[in-house]
Image 1: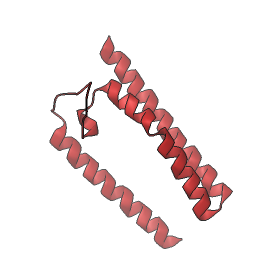
Image 2: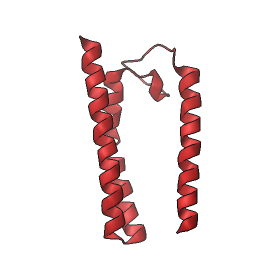
Image 3: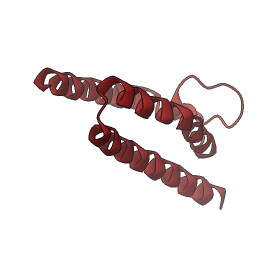
Image 4: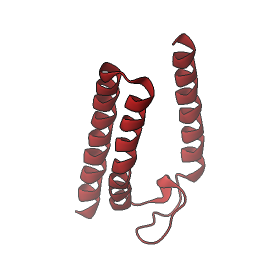
Length: 103
């Protein structure tokens, strides 16, 4: 269990570092509101909001996979609540930014 926690923390740290580097490299680009955009940061706030909702099925799959793998209701509930809260906060954040941008 200790190794799993260490692996999880290292994965988060590496992901954050890569995200920050990509954001700095691509922050001044033009925002895309239609068509394909490879990078999340190139999307407009409306598209970021839509992309957030496209990830909802992935959230459900991750929670189900977690329960099947570890067979722990407690772990599944804790991780499910945390991931759901993050999802909701992200959706609200991009919705508000989209509406403020629209005004």
